[in-house]
Length: 277
Ligand SMILES: O=c1ccn([C@@H]2O[C@H](COP(=O)(O)O)[C@@H](O)[C@H]2O)c(=O)[nH]1
Image (tube, rainbow, N blue to C red):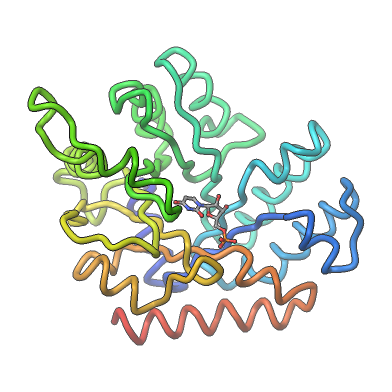
């Protein structure tokens, strides 16, 4: 089953809320844990146990594990395995992207099922040109994995690059539009949904962008950064049904109480379902 098909089924089954497992140092302290590998492990696995059975997508942010070196990566491997065992799709937020030959090595690291970090999908950055991402695309196709390309990110600095207009040779459109066009092309003809997604912040204005991609959309910035369910409808319109609205700190702040975290997931799923239909 392709990633696009798994994504569509997961959203229909569990709802459109995605939980980020981001073990910030400050949150570890708030939970009463030390900012060390033991604290990281208790925090991350505790959060996964609380939310992964109830959400469609779990999104660990790799940076928070990498800061502990190999022992942190070992915890990330368990986060991935436990989340998948609980029935959630794992979208590893690594934002990789490099010249083609190096992109291939990244793709092997995160998408080849024989890798210890193999995930259902990853985030990738197109800043070296969309063509540099082709090894990710080929590898994702080979293993039925998914990709989420940064298009219009949730941070206020993004527009400097993403709203820049390409030369006529490249279509004379904004960089964000160009990324969405590439994704539309990759997803063309796929049913029920292609596997090549976009990252679009739940905080952006969104006007002038066409989100009809026939593919998945990740909308980070929901919750802590100010994005709401109404913003998902406002920004994405008819394409909102393909959006996973993602929050990390908004849920993790409620820990370590597993019931409070679980209830936050159920509430967000209900709210999104009511609004988006
Ligand atoms: O445009 C983007 C792309 C990725 N992110 C990531 O999502 C989470 C947001 O965390 P919150 O605590 O819900 O703010 C984090 O991992 C970011 O790296 C994003 O925020 N915006």
